[in-house]
Amino acid sequence: MEALDALLNRVSVARLHDPAPSAEQRERLFAAALRAPDHAQLRPWRFLTVEGEGRERLGELFASAIAASQPEAREEVLQKARSAPLRAPLLVVVIASLKEHPRVPDVEQLLSAGCAAHALLLAAHAQGLGAMWRTGDAAYDPWVAAGLGLAGNERIVGFLYLGTPEGGLRVPQRLAPADFVSAWPG
Image (cartoon, rainbow, N blue to C red; front, side, top):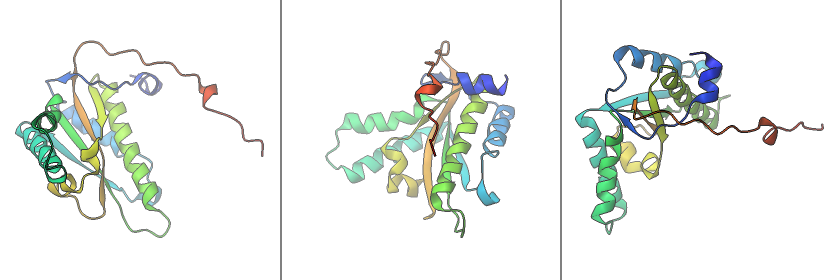
């Protein structure tokens, strides 16, 4: 697939099933992620893969985070959290691993990790895989961060759900660049 085709036609795919990306496909996914813009070559990212029974354990972590912050949470809410990671055969947790640097503020490093996540999504699309970037409360919950082993300088950028698309891919809505671009008059 050509680069522009991937950029112009990538869509989020919510309905994913087995098989998960192969070892060869995963190698390409992460190789693409590592090409993200990176001021001072800090490599301010890392990735966790979650699959198999690990998805069930991640769901339990999500549910326990809700129960800890909302003791009155209904069982339906907890069950929804438990089942969330089961929506795809592979999840990749994208983590911004922030480094102290005199010229590269945290915000640039977060953006770099976000670019790594986007590159991974594009590489998935280019290989015929389906992918969805999700966040939700779990991405910002300190209980979840601790359960995943994040250090104090780390932040979850997102949970990337990956697998084989169920059915065909939708056609992305075409937006007019002129609606979003203007010239600065100086």
